[in-house]
Length: 179
Image 1: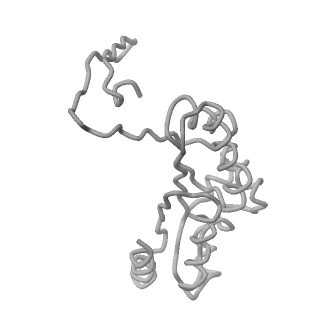
Image 2 (image 1 turned 30 degrees about the vertical axis):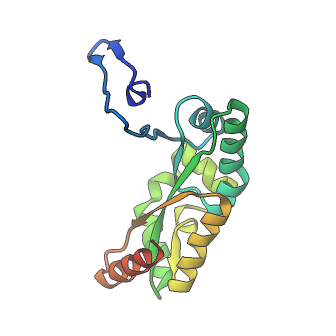
Image 3 (image 1 turned 120 degrees about the vertical axis):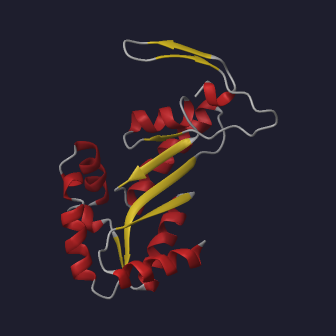
């Protein structure tokens, strides 16, 4: 973080040594984001280390009730200003919702076993990753992405997960229309 703020850095570790500075006149500050899910890391992301967080496998309910309020309260307490919340979720525009959810369950199964992601899925009331994937026709996907915005998400990153070229094309077309 200090290097991105134009400060000199000096570090000497067991395998890495770094000394230097980056100074670009009139450059805006580089935003630093921290992947954070739990309360302690969210507080650090807002107040100590960064300007916000990047989430994965975290649904709209959890973002609205846990992530955004925790970040906002920490930023207000620290006086650091507005925070960014970047939400990343699997997305597929498709008419075959069952097949897409089955694929999401297979492709993202590991997140069901990792404690930090499992905790977010539990907060959401989700049985697994397939339950937080944004899947459906254009109207459904558009509405779910709008739910994220209403939850306080400032930036959304869609992770396509279909192997069907038609689904990929439809998903990309919808996402482009939302920009």
